[in-house]
Every structure is written in C-alpha cells, then in structure tokens.
Amino acid sequence: MKDQQFQQAGYFDPEACDLDAFKRLIAQHTAPEDVPMASDVLANIPVYDAPALRPVLMDAAARRRVMTEWADVLMNGAGALILKRAYTETTVIDEASAIFETIIAQEKQTAGGGADHFATAGANDRIWNTLQKLCKAAPDVHMRYFANAAIAAVCEAWLGPNYQMTAQLNVVHPGGAAQQAHRDYHLGFQTSEISATYPAHVHLLSPVLTLQGGIAHCDMPVDSGPTKLLPFSQAFAAGYAAWRREDFRAVFEDNFVQIPLSKGDAVFFNPALFHAAGANHSADIHRMVNLLQVSSAFGRAMESIDRKAMCTLMYPHALRAVQTQSLDDLDLRASVAATAESYAFPTNLDRDPPKGGLAPETQQAFFLRALNEGLSADAFAEGLNAMAQRQRP
Image (cartoon, rainbow, N blue to C red; front, side, top):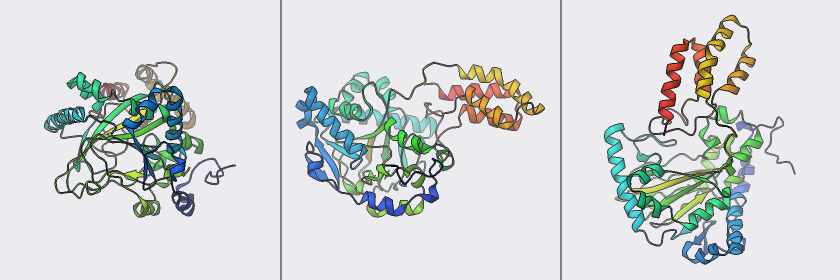
C-alpha cells in the first residue's frame, strides 16, 4: 500500500506533513509479548539484560532470534532499546573516562573545545573521534572498551556485518540546557532546504545506513538529563521534513520519555527517532556519554577517486565556460557534480567542525562558489588544498 505521506511528486514537503497522523503513530504501545526476549519494558522502550543474553549470543540460532527482535524494535517498534549492564565490570569505563577528561582539558587549551550540532557551543564538552583518540592514548583500554559482544550484536542486527564504528563524547554539566528535538545522520545533518531535494525513498533509506548509540559513563538519573526519546516516531516517513516544524517539536516535548541509566548501560536507537539530549537539572552530575555512530559497510563508492586532482584540472576550463557562456548553468552543474566530492563527510571534525551549520562546506559547493565569485585557478587550488588539510585524519 502506498504510504499517504508520499507527496505526489515523490518528495516530502514540510508544510504537507500530517501532524495528526504523527500523533496517531506515537500513540502506540509496546506490549511484553512484542519483545519476548526483553527483561522489561519502560515507557514503551524494551530493556534487555546484557549478561543474561550472553549465552543467547553464543548460540547461532538464538543469536539470530534476538537480533531479529532488535531489528524489529528499531524499525517497526519503539525505535529504541536499552542494554542494561552492557558492561558488568565498569573499571574500563572509568579508565576511559579519565582519559577523556584529560583529552577535554588538552583540547580546551589548544582549540577551545568542540562545537556541537544541536546545542549551543560551550554548553557542554565534546570530543570528536573518541574511537581513534582513545586508541592512540591507551590501546589496551580501547581494546577492552570495545570488546563487548552485546554492543557488537546490536550493531550487526541493524547494519549487518562489516559495519564501521565511530564515536564522539558528550559531557553535559549541571545547568546544561536540553537540545532541540531532531533526527540524526545522514539526512538529519542536512539543512531543511537540502533535505527537501532528496526524493522520498532516500528519506526511507537514510535510517538504515547508520545506528545511533550511547554508553553511559556515569549513573544518569532523570534529573541529569538522559536522552529524551519519542517512541515510534522513527516510523513517520516524512520525519526528516517535519522535525524542524514547531508544532512537531511541541508534540515531542509533550510526549517524550526519559529512561534513567546506570554506568555501563547502553542505549541504541534508530537515527530517525525524534530525540534530544535532556537538560541537566542535577546539582553535581556531569553527565558523560560516549555516543556511538555506527555506519553500514555499503555507504561506499566502488572506486577510489582523486577528486581534488580532477577539480584542480577542470576548474580553469569551467571558469572559462562561465566567462564565455559556452555551457549553460544546468550542464555545467552536471559536470561539476560528476567531478567534485559532493558530501561533507567523512571529515576531521576537530579541524573541520560544523560551526555555523550542520556540516562543513563540500568540495562541490566550494567549486560552484568559486565559479560564482570568479576565483582564479591558483586561489581555487589553494582553497582545495586547505580543505584537504582540514579533512585529513
């Protein structure tokens, strides 16, 4: 049956998003029989006891059953799940936390701290790429930290094997404000204008390319602001078009749930789930979460291309085409699209942060801007080199 949220032209229009349909969708409930392998259901979010699942994950048939249940929860159910006691021994959590605190102090001295996507810069502490930084600082801690079969199984349940792990730390201090409701990477990191240019089927594809997770590095009662989640909201097909609308955000604020977490717990959710970090109303809890952003192995091109070299070679000819009007704008843009990198990620978010927006400028956007501004070939090449330097690992 064709989803009524699809627009006639195959695109989602923010103004056409049906708020009543959204309200009906999030009015669902998770029944215990829907999640037979869960140990509990809290505010519609299924909770799984990780140590109890250890023998399940070691048996191939049983492992597939629980992973099937997790995938169904993330796609069709509440859209989020919790692994209680993902780390039964939290010593490695404390070791990693100490390293992260050192990194935060060092980065504040050198760069003033990292910017955030959906919260005011400076309202929290952020470390980009904790995966690599932890490994460089203490490879043994990194090894033991990610030696977690339950976390790996959730990633595999959603993305299949050969997934790629990344991680970023977020620390929200007492008094830290809540984020605004949003959806996540990929389309959630695009402006509303750019998101609207993607056809509806891509909006449906985006959530299955990544999995969002978080590892609690401290006890997180509700007053410390654990992530606000809106169960079932990931199933609203037009959600990437709708989440910036104030009426949808108001519904989120009226209906979100927060689940307290203990140190060593982990939460995972569909990136299309409406969610936001909560406000930290506690007096003395510095809420620390290592955010996992896990990517499908399939988001890759078949060939490795030196697009920087191609752009450098083509730019003088493109500039001449603009000056002589030998190509019209549509055809020239098509040529640039085939040549320049059109996506801002992956990048080094320490040197190339999302300040002033959700994503850095792409190579393609810079190419078109350079043509519009009439940059010389030398100035364009210099800009490409600077961009490549910011993006390198």
